[in-house]
Length: 102
Image 1 (cartoon, rainbow, N blue to C red):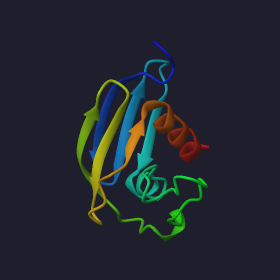
Image 2: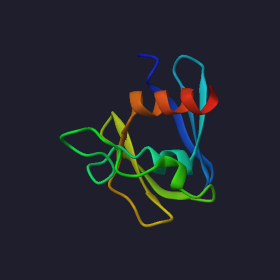
Image 3: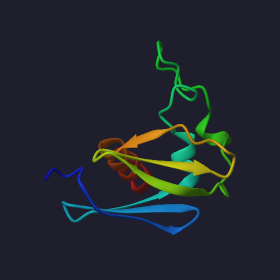
Image 4: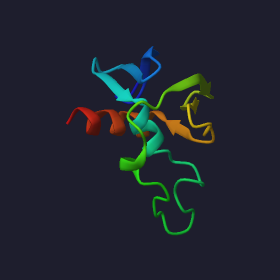
């Protein structure tokens, strides 16, 4: 297991995702941060890597639901604005969580 292997993934409430990692750390990531940093092709230009959505423009009250595993490497979810195409790999979630807490 690596430090990007989740032991538990849960919604503490619709506005937060909590991940307990195999290294003992815990990430609490707000849904607005997840939406603002969505890695999908709608949100990040496929050729330039330019972010097409300003993370600061995502309302703090954004919620997420329909959390689902994608294979053994990622999760997907639907947001209160209807967006649902992002696939969040475990290493990406670990980085988002560290940045949110740092």
